[in-house]
Image: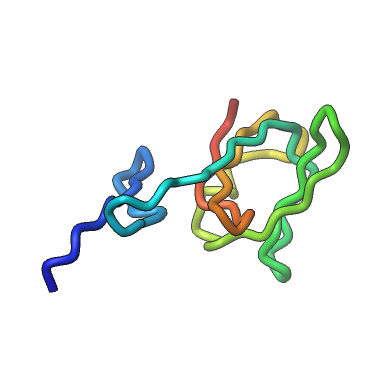
Length: 89
């Protein structure tokens, strides 16, 4: 009790990450064309200028359904390389 934390929220006011006070965040943004969203494996594949990138999804409720394959998107990765947020670019 009494610990201070920082919460990261997305545009829908959902908490997508949290850190203890003083922790340095190392989130990364990656943009590319959506190749697929794997529902069974909970992963997403992007085509970027440096090649294909497959990243695990933290949650499947990241609003992936309205985004069509081939769309240009930006994903936010946490320190573990897991997608915590995404949207059309």
